[in-house]
Length: 390
Image (cartoon, rainbow, N blue to C red; front, side, top):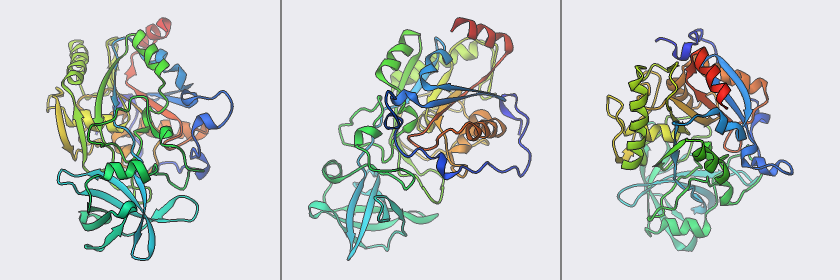
């Protein structure tokens, strides 16, 4: 495989750097000191082998007129609910609602510190007792790959209402304390008519503020909203992503295709990972969820169509990307399947270099942590012109 973005191939067997536990963001940035806001997080920028360090407030000058940001409008649900399994107290993480009214759920054991630890699911036929007398019967594992996630049938279809009254945001042991649901909502989140949403926050968009959105629009940056309802992550096993519900509206497809047409019109082939000397707009996904949605809506030639439904697409370096040129994302654990998607956009060596810089620079990981902007490598004269115009 040819290395993307002008970076030499990573040596065989070279391991991803280990992320020390103290590099986990334990609270939102706005709670770490006076005068801090969501956009106070740090921003690592990768352009092939070149890495630079910024703060998120600098994002508008790092983008350019004509760029389009693909953003996820899925709201975060209060998806963790206490329940009883026989005489044992458990926590149910509601991951996704199926078309037949069943839910994909994960059972977790309370750890005594306000968070949870992994627990085997099942057996089939087991019934859990939820608040307000609602029952939940485990029917079958979601996948033959394991028994962490199960299809379960609630005795009442109004699970969304139950979550609103008794649920709390899912959190893991690296966080310091419970946070209100508002801490897990992004500026792009829109309520859905059926109460659907994400089990965990589409966190790449968390640092955006209304003021930044206005500034980006004033500079000629466009937005293409999509929706992808994220399921629960695998905090321990780092499994590949499971099917998720998504929607790409017609208006967003038109905006993305118009930017792509400008790109292609300058003679730069898609999927090369190289920006060349082009000065037109780029398709930049905000988060891995946005990549999965827009790539799921793309034809083989990279034209995006209006689509909705379920996607089981796993974006890997072998599959590559057909639509996106860049990605704004958080920092992921080395074992996470999300890194394969990052490699598909930029190449393994480029991502490895960025992560080494993030560790050396004491960046913070996870949903309340710092961010990583991955852009196409630019020709030297294009980079010079871009810096003069900012």
